[in-house]
Length: 292
Image (cartoon, rainbow, N blue to C red; front, side):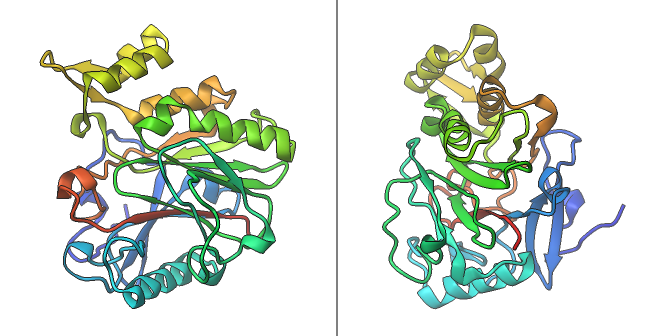
């Protein structure tokens, strides 16, 4: 097996949840990001950044992609330029989400290109982006929450969801799939999905009020498979599995779903994690684009 060595970290150093390999690790002159095999097979530009290969400093080092974490604007812009060059998209056409842990979806058009990076964006309070326009990269941001990627190879539509526990229990994926069906003519049978790196159950402790919401939103068997009680009023929650159920229950075929087995919190030297860093962190970016 080929090992990619990057600043002391190679593929064997990444802590996985199991032995599945749904991702490919890319190294472009020290800039490291993941792509998803299920999307690579269709030639879709896609990926999930790491914290390696940028110019940001201290707790934001080094590939922070957020303009809202106290970083220098010039550093963040340089980080975006580097990632875009490595992954093969035009950073000037990026469209950012404005995440608030809800379920609203925004349909991106040609006129939206550059919103959030080259000009002030009017895309407000949005956790899901979808488009059928080639050449416009969609980007959502993470530091433990779940990135979910969508692609319909028949109707040529791509989409991304940011899904924290609130977006998960409110089923933002169902909203996205319904938008793809109603507004783009997609069929769930054709849609392929990837669930990207995010916090794992062992690292994600939640309170009883959160557990109660999940208990109400899922079947008993689903709930029991995603929640473990610690018998002290705290629970361990598996957001990967909850989002898998959201996709399955929305009509996505099991064979069309790839679940990445990488935890942000278990890999703090590779990925930004809000919990691992106690909030002292930058932001990772998930991106997807229809090729031109």
